[in-house]
Length: 195
Image (cartoon, rainbow, N blue to C red; front, side, top):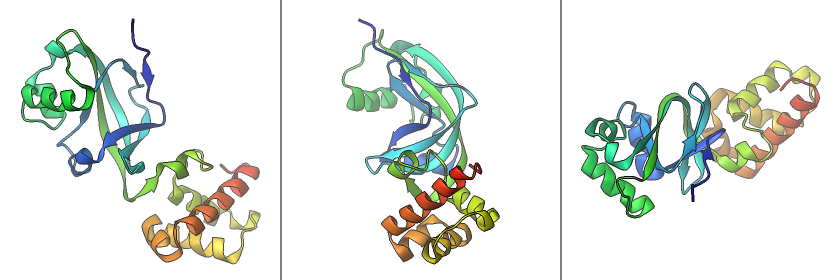
């Protein structure tokens, strides 16, 4: 029985062990997944670190290639951040269980287009912000504040996000107040047709 294809549309999950190698740039520019994955080259998705479910970057998909396990090369391993194919297969076996030569894998190439220093909780992106970044919402709010009606606290929080970043705002006001300010701004921007 053939496994159903997995679609990568808005985000791609990566184990936290690989975060620094990806964000450093050049050390890990692919992810190899067991099974059939579909992604559109040129599309941009959020790179979400597990188990924290925090988006740490936006990446552009550069390639999607299907191979059998026996066809994997040392070059494939190096692009995925491993020294050789043996090390890569050991790691894949830890994640997926024992793999055999005829098993299919998908190699997904990517490049980091934007890093999020403080990370963005995935539940914020999915839940209410419709995959809009907090800094974008803050910028749109400031550009259109005369059309919107937010209270002083929300206004202050959005200015802090715009000027000093999401992490600083969260440390100052707490995640719940920041999330509420972002949701209020998003919904008003949406209602005015600005987002």
